Amino acid sequence: MSFFEEKNPEMDRYLETHASSEPEILKKLRRETYQKTTQPHMISGYQQGRLLTIISQMIQPKKVLEIGTFTGYATLCLAAGLAKDGKITTLDVNEDLAYLPKKYFEESEYTGQIDFKLQDAKEFLRETDQIFDLIFIDADKENYAEYFRLIKPRTKTGSVVMFDNVLWYGKVLEENPKQRSTQVIKELNDLIAKDDDFENLILPLRDGVNFLRRK
Image (cartoon, rainbow, N blue to C red; front, top):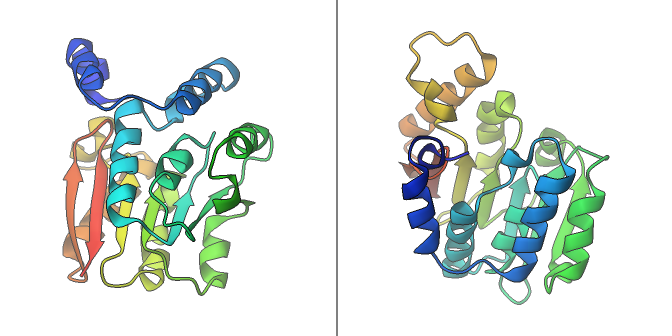
């Protein structure tokens, strides 16, 4: 859920009505996500989806990595900007829900460019030698700092990285958070801010996106 969606829903509706229209396949996927999953709020929102698509279209990446597929909404948004010979690798560990993203990946025009893996992301990152042009991370928050350490060697000058939920419903303002996920997100944001190999900005979109570019 976004800040405006919770605190000022009228503003949230205004932002949506003044953004580019949502493709029909994403409307269907979003609707089915709310019908068939127990935590539909985990889906990348309409506004965030437009951001992911625009960034991907600007970069036209050949290699994209997504950590945390959920129902595949963000995957399809990112795939919209792939180079003609590009590929997106998307990772998740939820076998019970895998049927849903698979269904929509097969229906989409990007089906041949999406590599959906049921695999632990840390394991994948330790094994792969691929270098990615664009990386989007929206997964288990307790591993965010470790993901940052592991993805860094998998980037190059100009690579773009995005971490979702980095404001964590405002919990990052807590001085001594008890929740482990809050502690790690604060650690991540500190690590990124101090890393001279990246330039970054936290976008206050939905629950916050830490937007990085490798120097």
